[in-house]
Image 1 (cartoon, rainbow, N blue to C red):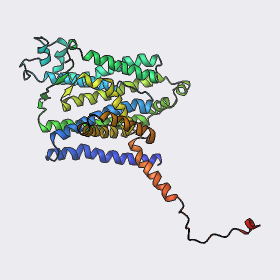
Image 2 (cartoon, rainbow, N blue to C red):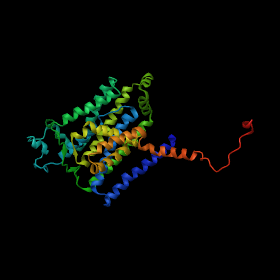
Image 3 (tube, rainbow, N blue to C red):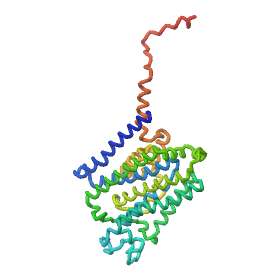
Length: 378
C-alpha cells in the first residue's frame, strides 16, 4: 500500500472512530442505551490510549523505550486527585474538613502544601508542572550523559520503582497504599451524576483526538523528521550538526505531559488513584499496547490500548489466572508474525489478495500438451 493510500485510509478510520466515540457513544448514553458503568469503562480505555500515545511518541518515533511513562500518568492523576479530595469537604467517613486518611494519621489541620489545591486552576497547573519538571530534570541528566538504549530503559524503570516506593509511604501524606478515593464533586458537579460522567468521557475522547492530531502534525514537521532520523541513526544526525539531546529532551517532556493529562482524566472517571498505577508493570503493559496496535503509527497505540484493555476486562472475569499468559502470548505472536501491529492488517490482507489474484491459474490436466518449438526438436 502506498503512503498516500495509507494516509487516506488512516484519515477515514480516524474520522469514523472519532464520530463514533465523540458523538454516537454519548448520544447512546444520554438515551439510556449505554449504562453509566460502560461509558466510564470506555473513558478509562481512552485515558490509557493517551498513555500509549506518549509511549509511542518516544519509542515509535524517537527510538527511546521508556519504562517510566506510568509515573507521569500517575503524577497527573495525583495532582488532580488532590483537588478532588479537597472537594469532598466534611462528607468523608470521619465528617472532618480534611481527607479521611489524614484524620486516620492523627492530623487535625490540613498540611500547608494541600491548601492551594482547593483551586481547580492551580491543580490543573500542577498536572502539567510537576510531571514536566521531573521529566525535564531526569531527561536533561540522562541525555546530557548520552544514555540510550537498554540503559535508558533501565533508568526510567528505576525512577518509576523509586517513586512508587516513596508514594507507598504514609508520611508523604498522599494516601499511602490506598491513595485517593471516594471523590464527590468536580467543579461543583456531582461525579455520581450521569451527565458529569458523560462530560468527562467526551472531554477524554476530545483530548485523545487532539493529542493524536498534535503528534501527527509534529511528525510531519522538520522537527519530526529529525526526531525520526534520531530513531533510525542518531550518530548520523550528530554528524549532520544537530544537537540530538535537545530533540530527545523536548520529546521526553511532551510525552510526559501527554501521559499526565491522561492520568488527570483517569482519576475522576475511575474513582481512585494510588501508587499501584505507577509501578513498572503498568509501563510494560503500555509498551505491549503500542506493539500490538502498531508501533510508530499513532493510530496503532490507540487501537492497542482500547483492544488490549477490553480483552483484559473480559479475560480477568472469564480466566483470571490466565490473563498474564494471554497477554504475553499475544505480545509474542505480534512480534513474530505481525510486527506492524493490528493497524498493518488491512495492508497485509490487501497485499495477499493482490498476490492471489495475480497468481497464474493452475494447469489443466485434461488439456492437450503444447507442441515444442521446432528449434527445440533439433
